[in-house]
Length: 174
Image (cartoon, rainbow, N blue to C red; front, side):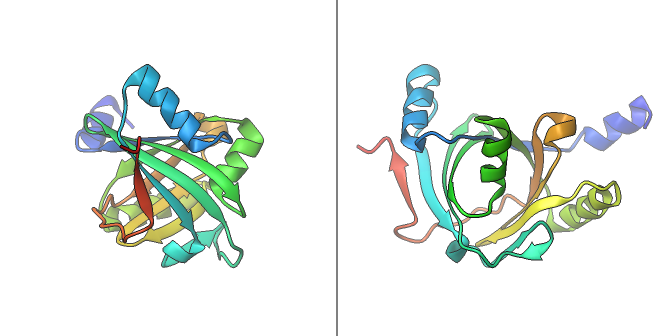
């Protein structure tokens, strides 16, 4: 692409999330973020296959149980997400086993129609999604780009969701 084409293509894009994956206890990691960076409060969720209405794992419907802990906090207009895999097949587990703790993915927010276009473009280039999920009204595709870009790319519609009782808590607890 030319400079002009790149400028035009990128002028309305929105990277809305930076995610880190960790093997460590998520509350220990959150304490460090709060202490060192003053980022928080955090919404902490435990997510299993039960909370997802659709999940594909490397192109196939996921049939095995899994569990992750996920914490999110806003810092300006950027959402920071920290994921701790607990068990089962999930991209965060693959990531920390292969690379250790670190930058997991950037998330670009877009419409579902744009997501389908990106899905087609990425798969045509041989960049496959490890994970496609529907978490209530929030849809996300996680593309495996770590080896070439240094992080995975996630695209999602960024839907505002109301979490049901018992799925999340705020940290630090007061």
